[in-house]
Length: 99
Image 1 (cartoon, one colour):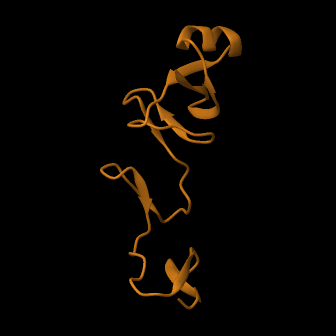
Image 2: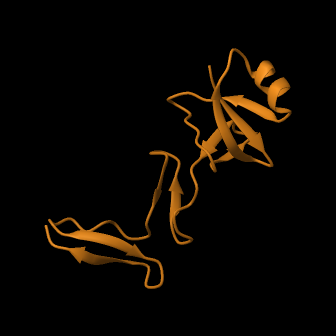
Image 3: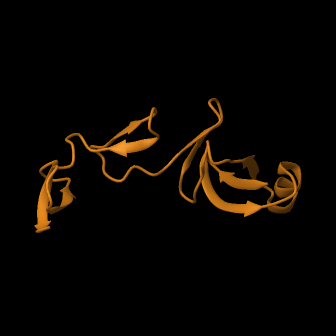
């Protein structure tokens, strides 16, 4: 089974192990199973009340959308053939190339 190793609410490692109990005895830390429906990764946050993992917030202005399980910018990505990077200072998409 896929196991997330948790320390202070943060995933510090992911391993494959026979059981949560064995993973906890080996690591000395909290272990939680994760799945494709509830994925986990290193540096993700674990909420023990909801039993959910959340990826790190990419920028302070971005908001986590529980429905699609992704962080979203406060303004949508431009829909054209160009390439953009997020600029947190202006909280906007800045064109970095042409498509």
